[in-house]
Image (cartoon, rainbow, N blue to C red; front, side, top):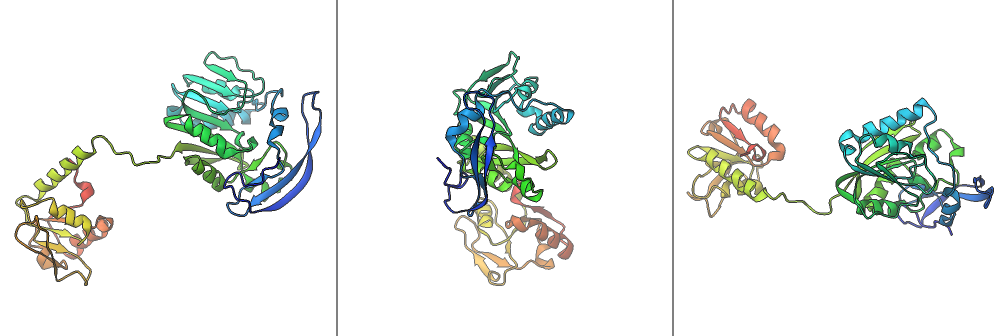
Amino acid sequence: MELLNCPVCDSLEHTAIYKFSVPVSTYSNEHGATARPLNICCCDNCGHVWNRAFDPGDVGFIYQDQPASNAPMSEAAHRRFNEAIEFIGEDNLKDKRVIEIGGGSGDMSMLMAGLAKEIVVFEPNQTQITHERITHERRMFKGYDKKADLFFMRETLEHIADPVDILKAISRSMTPGAKVYLEVPNVKAIFEDSLWCDFHYPHVHYFSVDTLTLAAKRAGLHIIKQMPTASNHDFAVLLGKTSSKTIVPDSWWQSYLDQQMLFQKKTLGKSFAVYGATAVAVNLVECLGPKSRAKYVFDDNDLLTNGYWYIPTVSGGAIPIVKPSEANVSELDLIIIGCYLHADVIKKKLIEDLNFKGEIYIPSSLRA
């Protein structure tokens, strides 16, 4: 069985870039040493690089009954563990439920256990875990019946035949606000440094930041931040869940009314104008109703000036649309900027060019 479609974008269009037969050694007498094919391809659609010849059925003999991997054997390895924790942030670990996928020796989980409330390690091989807050699930991760606050997967995603599928399983098991830490080899380093030996059978995938971003997006996740690791040979990302809908705060409507009332208070008894003949400005003037009336609507567009605004709820009839001048701004106590995307430029013009001495407001400054 081969991985014919691109595992990231599902395209069938790709270019073969490297073919070879490589040995796969095991520590089990049942299987012994064997050879497997490499057919490294690059997707013509998204640029993902993967071994098309990888057989998902080989996962069992590659990863079960093997010695624990990823044990830190040097000061540099310990430093990378600590860098990962610093990158994740203590707030995302302290008193949290953590799931580590592909935990290897378990050393990383034992380090995180100093902060976390509970850790579940999914690792098909034996581990060296000896910590009361860590549970070892000796199997591949397919999902979990308890939701977790942090998922940790270091040097693991590149080994999994369907990376989008496992990211979707993670996404389904995340609590609100949960994070995902991923660390993978950087395909750019392989090509730039001619690391031909990094093309080997256990690695199915060779990610770039762009292709990992796309895989995460298909699982409803997005990159919050990223960093290079191992002298740019690898990179790490912190993912969050992408909201599928706009979340409306419970207090939104009351806040809306409060801001309207504040705006009405600011205009009462004042001579004012609205800068910008925009739909936003219409709403600002309309919400005043019969209580206040803008003297002018300012706009710099020749096609709009010398016209009028007719708003049914505004007392006193039509409001003239004119270009601002030193003379007409001098008649005013207050100018409301209705085209607030250009607020900085307009504010500078009013003060420096037209010598306006009154108050200037934009909608975002109207806070109760």
